[in-house]
Length: 418
Image 1 (spheres, helix red, strand yellow):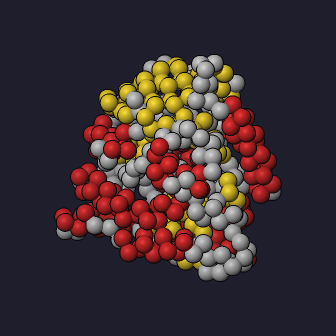
Image 2 (spheres, rainbow, N blue to C red):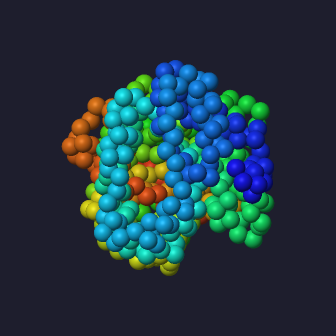
Image 3 (cartoon, helix red, strand yellow):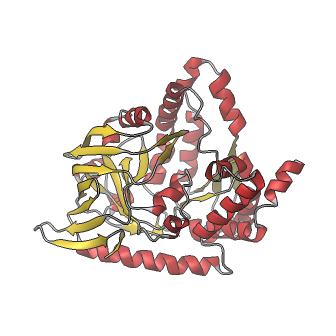
């Protein structure tokens, strides 16, 4: 580690970093003795990787296998690689991941790369590489979206990311601020983070139980620039906080999380909606999104910034113009209260109600683990190479639950649970 890296690392509270690693293993994954762990992370996150490995082995992990990425190596590809190489991806790696997941290996992702890393690169190359990677990733991704195994995502405050969030601060100050924001959002800024997560999961579970008891057929959103009816998939089930994977292990897939979510009906979404926060996507910031849905499909799409990128995303495949997730988050969530734009969906989606274009989650159906892809599609589940969340909630949005007979029940009023 260089002197510069040591100075940056010193900006991060080591006690809270250790707690985050412990929470990832004990709450995020609930890793079981003898279970292997596959871990991906940027090289900048090595201090957290090492802590995670320590807690994993203390919990009885069989084998911890880290796979690291590096921003400089990524940029080298875009600046020096042959053009035809952007239609390729490491399919062999993802096939190996799929085999590992089939053998009950747990999955942990540490995010922390510069969210605008590719902002200055050729957008056509970025789009080609993204599509190739999405296709190659399918064997592994299907194991994750079908919730075959326990998996979890946490974050590390890399210098390049911190400078995006706090551009006016010196690097070590920006890292310290982002670290504190991550620790607070991840509920590890207290002496018993595991107990804190148990209480939080109980609150989220009470929300999902109420929503599942209601059995709404649709949600109706209204507010400035919004008149949207989102039909809910047949046999949908609300999820939030801790969930049990097909391997029988209960885990928290996202840390942090403030949402409860389910599967919308891919063919029963109508109306118009605007985004309330920018979407950071592969080095581009897409802001001022405004779309119109007809029979589940986006038929008009505009953006005040990044419209070309948005349209490329929507043209990924047929399912890219349809919804795969709808999520409810109160405006008073801790991440919303922070007032920060993290440029990272793991955090930004937990600041507001949101919808996701693309692939649905099979676990958001009653007995979803037993349904075939054909049955999921017949019940309204969407299929796509992408899954991209963007925020539509604010303190001005009302949401009604709509029953099959047309009765309405207030769910949100002015951005808060009703």
